[in-house]
Image (cartoon, rainbow, N blue to C red; front, side, top):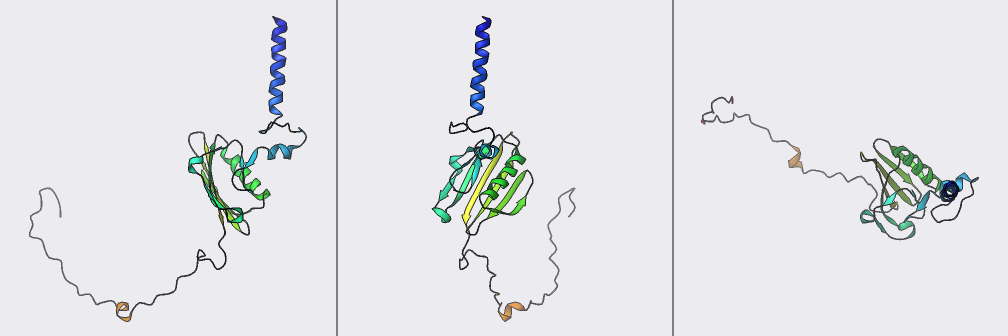
Length: 188
C-alpha cells in the first residue's frame, strides 16, 4: 500500500512538472529563456502585428475584420480573468515591440490606448468589470491618406444674407393675463 502511494505521488509530480514546461502548441520551452516563455503567452489573432494574451477568450460574435494587409480594418473583442493593470502594461509592451507608437493613454477603470504606425492606427479599450473579468477591445484601421475626405478640414465660412444679420427690434409687450381661476392650494 505504501509503495503504491509513493508511486502515485511520484507519477503525479512528473505529470505536473511536464505540464509546466510545455506551451500552447505542446512543445517544451527551455527554462533559461524568459523572453521565449513570455512570447508564448501571446498570440497573433487576425492582425499580423497585434498580439493578445492567451488567457483572453475571443468573443467571435462581436468581432469584425475586413480587408488585407495594411488596408485591413476591424475590431477584436476578448474577455478573461486577468489582472486589469497587468493586461494594460502587457498590451503597451507588446504593441511597442511590434512597432506601434503609443500616442495617448487614458487610465481609469476603463483604459483607452491609442497607437499609431505610418499607415495604420489602433485603439485599445480595456475595461475592468465588477465580475472578476477584464474586457479587451482592439480597433485597428488604416490611417487616412493626405487627400482623403476622412481628414478633418475646417468647414468654409458661410456668410449669412444681409437681411439675416440684423436682428429685428423687439417691441416689449406684456403677456395676456389669464382669466382662468387657479386651483386651491396652488400658487401661480
